[in-house]
Image 1 (spheres, helix red, strand yellow):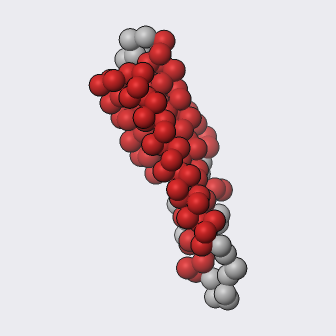
Image 2 (spheres, helix red, strand yellow; image 1 turned 120 degrees about the horizontal axis):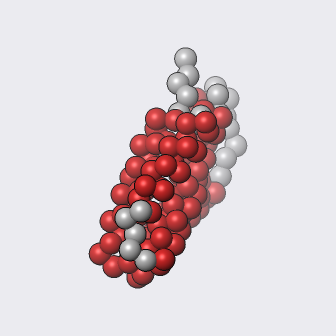
Image 3 (tube, one colour; image 1 turned 90 degrees about the vertical axis):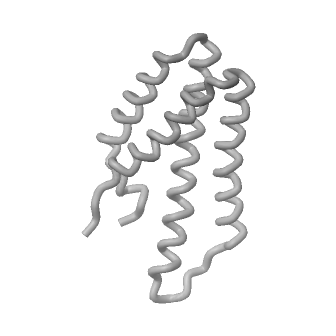
Length: 122
């Protein structure tokens, strides 16, 4: 089963939104709220880029026949994934300073939410 289809969106979306909304209540200004939401969007993009790279690596590793793939494309997706989260956190530090811990905490929570929402395969 493809990794993207393994995400149970009925669990992922509500849990993801509830945790993000809960952390938005800790913001002290509109700028902090926007940073939290911006890092949230970057986190989602980061997680889905990560899943696409992992899916391709799993396909390559479990294939019985040679699989045509581009190492450069995989590397570029991984670099893009890292750049997205780094850029989001850098901008977040610029606007929130030491309070960047709130969006960073949300990033860590989203990783666990993704793990909880994965459907188990046989």
